[in-house]
Image (cartoon, rainbow over all chains, first blue to last red; front, top):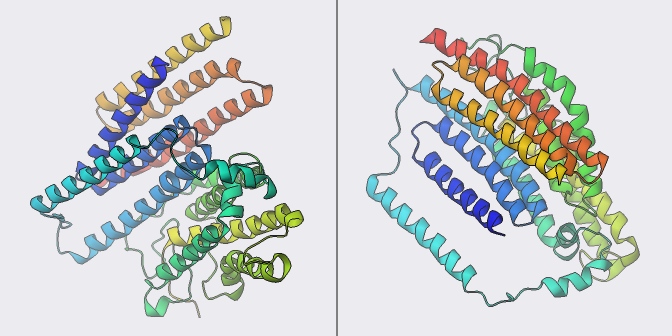
Length: 334
Length: 95
């Protein structure tokens, strides 16, 4: 269809233009806005490639939560630079021109090689997809993407969730010694808050965002549950659901309607670790019950996967909130 | 056939409002009036495009979902507008 081809070409041209613009713009903030727009356009591109699960992950994690992460990082870097330098904030030059040209050539080379490789694949391209498709009904899920993620490649998913949890530890290790174990500060700054907030920033008014934070989270939680349950047979699944829950939690936190519990609390730490631990326990139980590590007994496959997904959603949502909120900064209260 | 005509016509009208909103963002003098252009014109554009797609939906539930998406867009525009306006006013005062 000629209309489809025109649309695709226009989309790719827009993607490249937006990427070039956001790389070359001066201010960090506009570059981040360009990145978020780029992520949203990529969602459209993934849908054109008929990959709704990837589109969902791209939209929620990369464009959504990634954008929030970059914006909060930019705000923190900007404010610390304004505090430490004497006058106007330093304008960081970044890499030299020769380095930039070298990086551009390298990126173009990698991109061109990837295009050449993909275009030179024989038709039909060699893949394990038909073999996998035969084995998928035994996993018990209707959605092939989630069946592969939690059935055939469950080891990868387990390791990914452990990596998320390690990232949280990495972020926590950035906190100052005296702040270890307290809660991260995120939300409207008040001049009465000590430690971490630059004095003189007016308190953000609670009006519109507080209203949004009161109205939207119930719907968001229902949609997250729907995504989790529906991921068995349709696009969705644990990660998208966790991103939705994390987004709702961040909305509530940023409006100042709630605070993250102290990171030294045992119950909070248990929540973060529960998902990977449960996954690991089920994997080890597979040894006596089904004959191999991470093997599920075939009749119990779907219930086990659902239980693992629920635990994973809670842990990953908590981990995502902590990753975006940053290291614990407030003084631990006596 | 009639449904396709409706879709194309109303979607074209929605695109017209989007173009108007973008022209406003590019041409209006200060941030507050640009916010007017973005929130009002773009929300109306999204609403028109949603109305254009509704007859093509397979089931009434799908049509309701499309209208819910429009509602969510309106909610986000209504929330972000005042916040951006407050930031714009604050930045204007500091300069």
